[in-house]
Image (cartoon, rainbow, N blue to C red; front, side, top):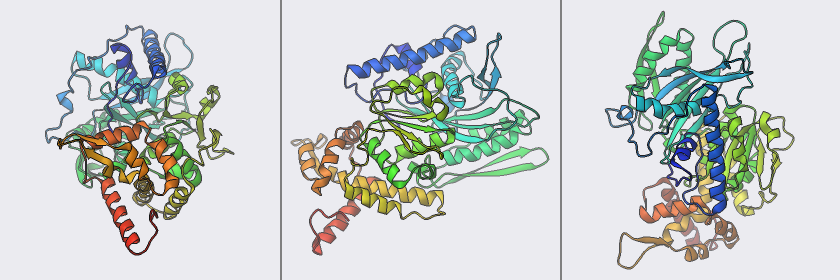
Length: 504
């Protein structure tokens, strides 16, 4: 889901700001308050960068030029991107100079930067990675037990492009108290399940020796990323085990390959998911609270996926590091994931929906505006709940993803699926097309859906969706296919004596 953004502030501020997940404005700056908040967020992150360099006794690095071309090293010979850009292993180490607490440090990186300019470009990104691998900050100490967890985050570039961070955090083999480690893979590709399997292989080799990671990752890096539904095989030698053949298969539904809806429905009831969905659709400020990083990342990516074919256009940070917590004060829409032990630091609750994902919580909504259960028309809510009830108890991830995505896709088909009928050519110009909002709203059926649609068309996600459709109408897209199927069923029902406007 790549989105272009107009950024605010000096080039230096923009470079620092966009090395972390979600720190960007929407496609257009709507008012002065947006400018103010982004300058504040930029200042927070720039201060963090200053602190990081002061702690290490370094000068602040200059940001890379904004027009620097991508490194040819990351372009695969087969024309498809490689599996990953690099792998880092991050550990928490005691602060130097007698300071209290621990800080995350990179203890392994593959591949190494090959040039000075590349090292400068990677420096800011690598510092951001350490923050997301251990967002708790300095509150660490050696451990004897630790529950392994896998999660993901996103790094947003200056041009709005995104790189995915996949992280597995665990306690390395050893005796006695020892610091945890995090394996982190940075890739331009989004496929959570596939990278989870890669972590299994990395972890197995790490238990033998750090040196054993290199040959496996080198083989992986030389392999092109498979097309949807395809499998690639990698040969890797392990002492005492011999040569292993590892098969990596990419899911067929590529737009859902970074999503796992199970955690969302384990944490929230169907009715609660609908209330969250309603708030997200109307682009409100939403914070999710959980103890596990894996829960936060899975739930936030699942919530964003409910919007398909629309794309969340605002700040999205699945795991907010403690040092960047002030981002929650932004007056603009956002989706934030915050660990439960930081909840007491959220002192301003105005116009917020705070969702508690922990199992022991008495109420899932710590703070709410109060109208979340009435934003979606009651009939559409009933239909969504009926569709969600189609999922089976012990369903597979693929089956669950299919049922859930179809339910919410059907919601958009019923409410705004007629949009294409109201994109008209201007005069004799076949290329210039424009959206007729008034006729579109007037055509909403049934009429009780009109108030919701009137609010939805004011959102950035709908606006940018329509802009893309005006330029490039995609009649072969999955959403368009579902719209055509719905309209055909509706015509058949009307021919058989159904009521006009009946949703089927």
